[in-house]
Length: 202
Figure (spheres, helix red, strand yellow):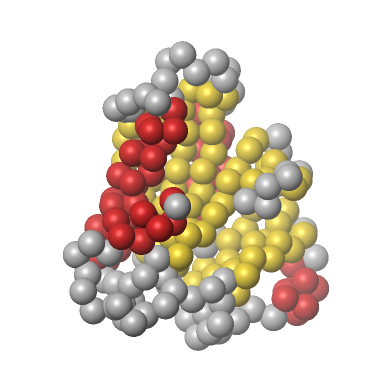
């Protein structure tokens, strides 16, 4: 249901892509000498990012990992768009539309709001991304805020999310999530050879 509403939110003002279907991506996690490489292979395109840490452990949910004792979520959500890559201004519009959707969704789930936060556009490796800091309700006993970074990779919305537990080092968690975003690499028209990568990153 969440993905259904997201599609309509992001594409409300677009009119030419009714026949376009989002590319399907498969996720692979490769143990690496620096931590973990996460690979997303589609039908014709791919993208990757690195988690640089001493310890990276799986959780019951494949979208969540324990990174040096800190929880990190990395997800992709497909959305329909024109096959032509959006320019910087359009990417920023889509990023902000998704941020607003996420805030509305979170406030509804927590039965709280409006929650205060701060959004900031970043240019990482010549790619627009959105850093969002969202303060949790004061009566939340464990989490004080959450960091998000959103990035558009082909027709996928890549989201990094890390909660800040009360009493934990906020700056350290922010550095972790930004470092993941800084390692995102896009490979148009190229798939990743997982067998080859397995030996390259060991």
